[in-house]
Length: 360
Image 1 (cartoon, rainbow, N blue to C red):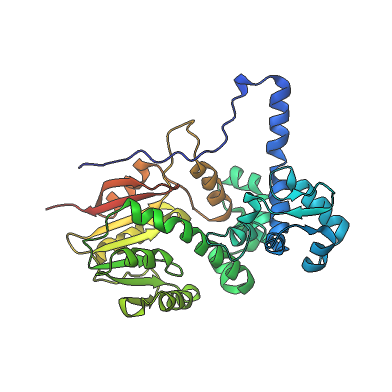
Image 2 (spheres, rainbow, N blue to C red; image 1 turned 90 degrees about the vertical axis):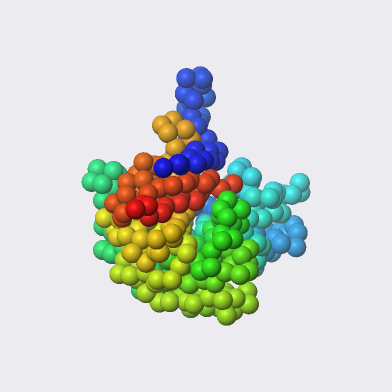
């Protein structure tokens, strides 16, 4: 078995170096770290109030912004003044006027790759409360979200349409950024049919089909996302090349594909469920088929990577959810009767993890 390009990328995550700091510097660094929750929530509020959108045409007074966003002028000024400390927004020299920066531009709703929905997702009350119960998750190994909500996040958004809209938009935004990196990292040109299992609104599959004009696609999704996928494929003039099937990948996966892919699916689940997903894909695959898991790969100890922080998010909010190492992905494949044959890092934070059936 040859595994190529197994080293995952190393996105910058600030690494503390206490041995190189004086005591005063370490204390200042700790204050910045522990008050990060304040900054996070302040950014959420700015996103909820659409401040970056209101500044799209240039600098405005805080009074104008308060009217446009329905906020208290003095409180809004204090919020925006605080956010200038971390590079979001810039206050005018005369005071009490603000304009966008490169960072706050990422919060504009209509810009390609907008992060506004992702930021808003961080402010969903039940998610925020779950992070406040991280100690419970670390002590017990159980999801704080499940303890508070009495249900999984997937079940929760199924009964909370406003939260579902934010989460689905956030996932679409993430796919918008990740899809081109996946297409660049893996050669799909030989595939006749590509099956995207749990593909959300279908943006990744749409990008792949645009790059492989002779291929057809099948997207399997739950009802809450399937309608959005149908709309996206129609907008991209791909409806004639894609079948959208409503179903649950834990039960069965459509046959007929050359390549099966799952992006950010197995990290939501414990090993038992992840193996069931992979096994169902393996059962649907032909002898020469391929399964691609598009996930972050945990790097070795002490190597900074966003996956290590995301893994904590999975612990808190998803029962059994976790990021995995190369060896852990290898075990998932082998439990489903597959072999891990290749890992291609993308230019982003994810890898394309290829599995095939053992040759007899």
